Image 1: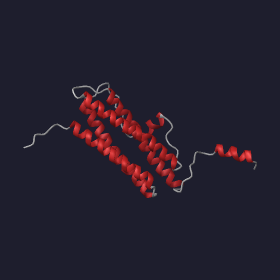
Image 2 (image 1 turned 180 degrees about the horizontal axis):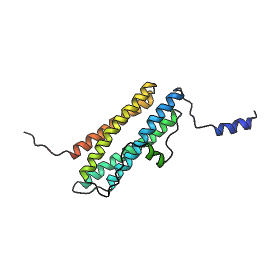
Image 3 (image 1 turned 180 degrees about the vertical axis):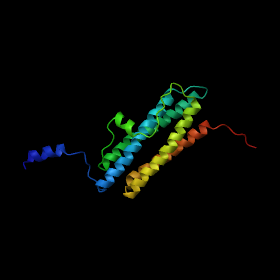
Image 4 (image 1 turned 30 degrees about the horizontal axis):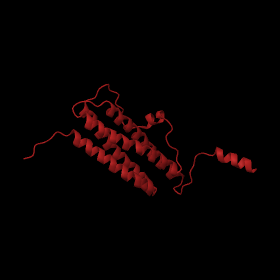
Length: 176
């Protein structure tokens, strides 16, 4: 084979980054992380939707809280996608692919009560933490400690968002 042919074949090869994890590990970890990525994108858009449509007497506090949560979720998207690529996987390509894979339910209502927004996001973040744990189990199975380590931080962030949203919506209880 001539050198030019070898160079051309290299450019035609799939985007497979060398990894010691092996093809089965790469396939399964990438699948788990792409499902999480679709959920994170969906939760990001939902969080921003509620951020943009917040109203009422606690507008400022809720608006700023959801903006902070949105920034945190958006930051996760690049980290997740790049991790999938680092291990030799292919990640999401489009909004259409995200919509097919997401497990976070959209909310397209024209109006949602502020406390209902907070409660819905609380539940979504709690579910995300559980899905991150499931993805962590896949990483543990293949000894992918780097992805598992990243997931541990994201679980902590999801739990913090859940906690803040829970406390934000909680009615004050008198103490005796």
